[in-house]
Length: 263
Image 1: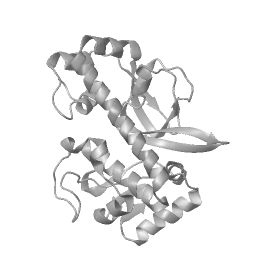
Image 2: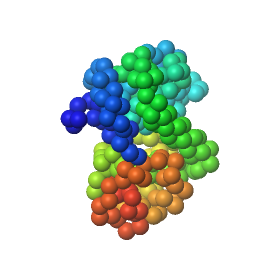
Image 3: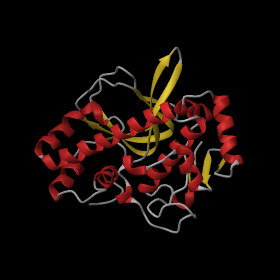
Image 4: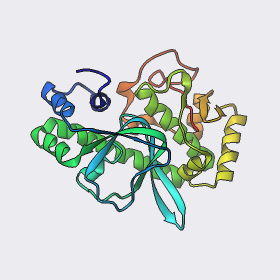
């Protein structure tokens, strides 16, 4: 099956733990995908909307979020290329959270009707999508623990660890650095702190020489310390099988060899 097609990103995601049946690959390839380029801070889905399609992220980054009090926004997850960001709307069509782009992004919209038809035709494909839903639920659960049980430094360290692992698993965090178009406000909203506090936490991690954080780029310098600060355990991500082994930093597990670059 030809790489570079919109469906190749989804196939790569679904085949992390083993190849799909040829007929299931063909079902994915035959889905009617509508490609859309969206600008920075574009709200793809709003909280409370009734959705008729799923959003496959091909390039860029998204975040899910909800307004909790007044205009205060809480980010509940980041999405990277290959993620189906609103998979739960396939059977629960009312969006529980808003979905917004962080920087320009490219998406492929998949009609619910077409995807449900493909799943009805294949129990093995349905199991794969069910597994993806469970992984997303595990990520959300870990974010709840992160906000409720860690201090600000631990929260940010955990988010950096998670993004490093997830991006490394899809080949987007080589040489321990990557770029991600988030702002200091986005960092604050993900950690449940103020922008001023977020800036202080970033400076503390720099001072500890755990990371380099320059103009939307973060490079991990001390993985062991970052993991200790975060209390990070990658098992909930279920992405070890996709890790690419390359020369790694001292103390960085062989199964993860990415670095982190952010905004």
